[in-house]
Image (tube, helix red, strand yellow):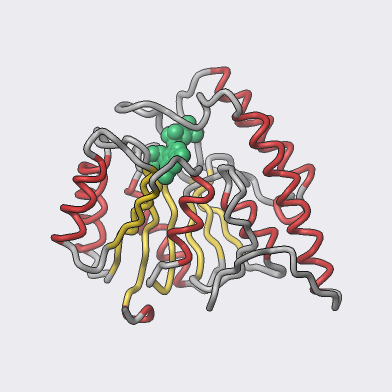
Length: 259
Ligand SMILES: Nc1nc2c(ncn2[C@@H]2O[C@H](COP(=O)(O)OP(=O)(O)O)[C@@H](O)[C@H]2O)c(=O)[nH]1
Ligand SMILES: [Mg+2]
């Protein structure tokens, strides 16, 4: 498939999202079709058992630009998104959650900002006019603490108000240093750590609570441990990336995004 013919790829990591996915896809379809954007949905599913896979197969049969990867065991949102990005055909890529916590009504704001020549456009809960919504106090504390740690540790995330937003778009072809055996959640952190001198914009959005289906990430028992390891890995990626800018080289990664 000729990548340049497709304007936009939307990468959706899914794990048992049958209560949300059909509705989400039709909402995305109606927004992007109205705007005459040539797009593909790219699903990466980790062995859902609730009918999500059957829906994805049916959707891709009806929408031949769209495609999917089915993993036979649970990977993680980080790796699922990474796998999707590697085979994305769009000139631009947007990653979003499949549970409506990232409302599709902001897709065009992200896409239009990308067209203004930004490398990355982040839908941000914490920039002016953005909002984290009515989340539970505990979830708010976890999110703010995790955000603070990313800003503290990573130079490439320091000036980003919402460095852990999973709702963001970027130009296809940016470098992305991740190992396929890493587990984690925050692809945006690695994307910024892998590249230097990116033009980044944050645009406001209102995060909403999940209404259907179950959260898997924040409720997972090893969430904190996995996130801390992930941050340290991103730090290493960042150090190597800055070192390369200064003239060195490294070969620790077992695969890289191709242009
Ligand atoms: N492929 C894949 N998708 C996942 C996995 N865990 C969560 N997701 C998807 O990633 C998105 C965010 O997950 P969610 O559990 O809602 O995260 P939370 O809102 O931070 O608790 C949703 O679209 C999930 O279906 C996973 O292990 N593999
Ligand atoms: Mg969620």
